[in-house]
Image 1 (cartoon, rainbow, N blue to C red):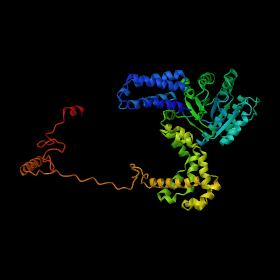
Image 2: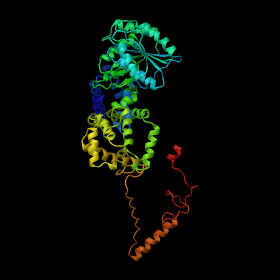
Image 3: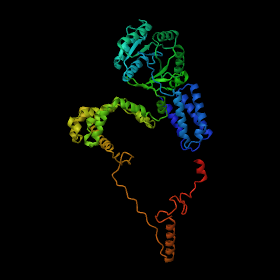
Image 4: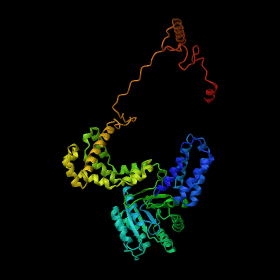
Length: 521
């Protein structure tokens, strides 16, 4: 969603690189480019004005003029101000001291509240909570059934005593759900409320009545990140009508300009707490302003990538694979390779994972062209092999390749390429695991050298040539003897002088610090 904004900002900062000093004109030109980039990304005008004012004030100050690298200092300022606009620090859910914790969802129809209720329930379950999804949208056709399906998919409990489709009292359902949660010992209640295509008095009154009935600990305003400037207007209306405590961004995986969604936190003073960026139940996570700012500026989001890996990968399995690699390349089989691929698949789309790495914005087109079905194709090829062939890929000859290709529905060349790439990858991984570094690359400190070539010995230093003139040679020898006597040469330690050129005859007792050093001390 923020690709266009990222590209514009990257182009702006590229013009600053290489300049040892930034003039006021340079800063004005940079601020103008950033303003255009933000407005094109659909960020609200008041937010853009406040942002540019802060950036210019700081850029014209001492922190840039006295910096060794002004361009990097400007990027640092933009990053910090972007984090501030997005809400500053990560906002956590406030859980009730005496349960159950009640979380109410509010927003317009079509914003994705019902789908998001399931994602939030799944996320809470991962956080070791026992959530209950409550169907209080009794007007939209099949809204109750939809929430029930979503709850089943997320693996959480559902409460919907009324059939919906215009039948039932949503306020009473919300009130009864609290008692039901206490009886069944659910510690979090997520209340899905009705929406409208536009803001009206009836919608606001119903939302206010539900809030009064259940006294929620959190009221989350769900905003569609694709609706443009109307996101800010809607947010202000809900703030006055319901007074929400946090914001959830939905549909962040869209390709619309999403700047308006970034404006909501600054305009309303309520922080963005969660972001939804896909159709799957686990395409949902806590919103981190610093990480989002880092993504927008093309610096990646390595922390989120690490968190995903920690949730997906088994520590025991990782240690087992590492031990195999240390034992030699042949210990790592195609079965192990397939299990690693399947674990990576569980983390999500390959292109999304690569997009979290720093600098990947420069090859965004290539990343977007990555087809996740390629991983499935590799899995099909490996599964078409016999157990012996997976354990010993060296056995795979021409006739075996033809059989494997036929069994997996691919060309024979694809099977050959996969096996060859596997051999190369196995060799590299084994070298890294045993501390030899990556073959063909320079050694990395702490990881061993990469090449096999022995280091060349430094040539021995040649001694000073003596003059062929006997008279001149005698003078040189006399001068050398005098230097040795003074302790300044010949490799002998000085009799009284210091090794730092303090001179003979001046011992530690006679030495005085310069005045500047005395003042400093």
